[in-house]
Length: 288
Image 1 (tube, one colour):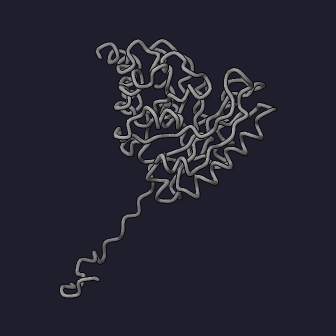
Image 2 (cartoon, one colour):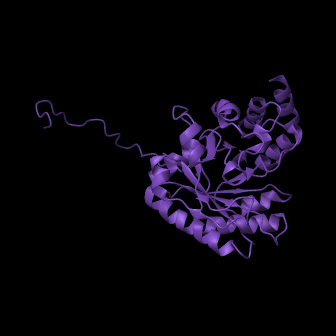
Image 3 (cartoon, helix red, strand yellow):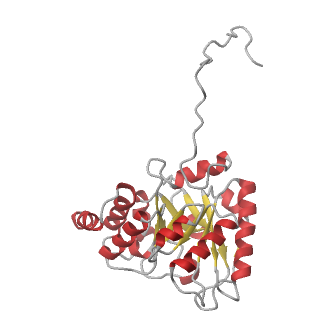
């Protein structure tokens, strides 16, 4: 029962001082619920509006590919340098320390591997993402794939419905359609389709004319690192994407397949958050 003996009238109302109404720092997120914004602000640094996501979900279709044979040896030492972790739920439960205090973008669709035809996936139950305290869920969308486009767009739509009900943002991950060119027109189309169907973040690939892809997408875009590149080229990729308006990078192989992964992820982070140019970041990599 409330203590009624020492009730004091309020006297500090700030009369004449307007309440400050702040807009949210992320593109396209101002009208989201508080919980969605809270989760997004764990992934993206509010000071820079950017994120370095460490992707190690490759095993869910590739198995123990190079660099992720032993997550405990190759990935766990890198976690401290990432803003967000992108992985599948099995690895998260079995190998990622719950004390690391890093937000997780949970790979939330599965169904095929590299041994069969990709993209025919289903979405996991949102309650599992809630139990894992995911800050976002990621679902692949295969725009331009005649056999899987409708199915994967429906998966995204379903994930968005479930995410909205639970306050969990959704990242649409654009797979490259078989009959589409890897150019700004295709990635602009694919990114916009993801956003139009409710994705709060889009993960896509950098290409020439990327500023157009960013401009026509109403939500933040993070770029995929793709195949392993020489360190300088990977840093140039990150720099060019950020300069073109990307809100971050979601790199895997260009980090964990590097000769010095810890140095590489720190150099990438300096490009993303500090604006280091590729030559400066490469020098940082070499120094580390």
